[in-house]
Length: 268
Ligand SMILES: *[C@@H]1O[C@H](CO)[C@@H](O)[C@H](O)[C@H]1NC(C)=O
Ligand SMILES: *[C@@H]1O[C@H](CO)[C@@H](O)[C@H](O)[C@H]1NC(C)=O
Image (cartoon, rainbow, N blue to C red; front, side, top):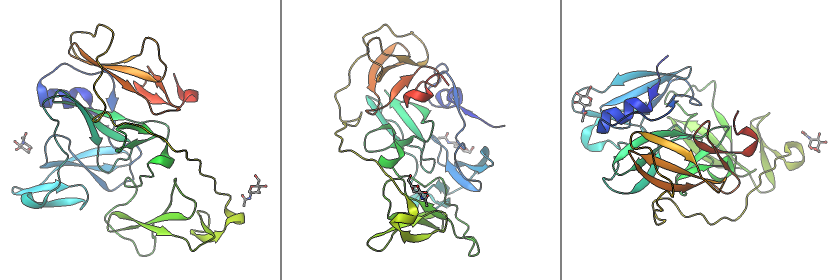
C-alpha cells in the first residue's frame, strides 16, 4: 500500500525532519479519481480502492485537478506553493478532507477525520454541512447508465450530479426535497431531511494575527500538541517555532490524530 507520508512531503520540500503520522491521500476518494501532487505539478496520483498510484505527465504538460488530466503547462492550475513566511493553508484539491498547512514555507498534508471536511473559508476542519464538498466523488468518465447523484449535506433541496468529473449543483422545485433513496426530488414528508446550521464568525488562519505557542516547542520536526489550557485549540510546532491554532467551534483537539474532532471520536 502506498502512503504519502508527511516525512516524504517534508523531506521533498525542505529537507527537514519528519512529522508525526501519515496521511493516505486517497482515503475517502472514489476509485478512478486523480489527485494532484502537492509540490510537483508534473506528478499526480490515480486513486484505486483508496490506494494512490503515482503517475507523471508527459514533458510540456502539468496535471490539472479540476480537468482531471494533464494539460499544457500554461493552462494548468497547480496546487499553490507555500509562501516563505507565515501561516496559511489550502485545500488538497479533490480530496474534500485533506489540506496543506504551510508554516514559514514548509507544507504538511493534514487530514480531517470522521466525516469532517476541510473548509477553505475558515482554513480548518469543519462539519460537512458548512463545507458540502463532493469533489472526491466525481470521476471524469461519465457512465450514462449509472449517473452519479450525491445528496447535499448543507441543504435539503440541493443535490449534485457528476458530469465530466465535476459536481453540478441541482435544486429541487419549491417545497420539494432531495430523496437519496429514489435519487429524485420528493415531498418533504417522505425525505425526513434535517440539516443544522448556525451563523458563525470564524476568522481564517491566514487573516488572523499569528499567535506564538506559549510552550517550548521541540527543536526539530513537525508536531501537533494539545493546548495547555484549552480543549478547542492546539499548538503546531515546526523545528522549534510554534503557533497556536483554533478548532472550529464544536470540535476539540485530539492528540492521537493530531487534529480537531468531534468529542465522541477523541482518542478512538
Ligand atoms: C517534478 O517531477 C519530474 C518527474 O519526476 C522531475 O523530472 C522534475 O525535476 C520535478 N520537478 C521538481 C521541481 O522537483
Ligand atoms: C421520518 O421521521 C419520523 C419521525 O422520526 C419517522 O416516524 C418516519 O418513519 C420517518 N420517515 C421516513 C420516510 O424515514
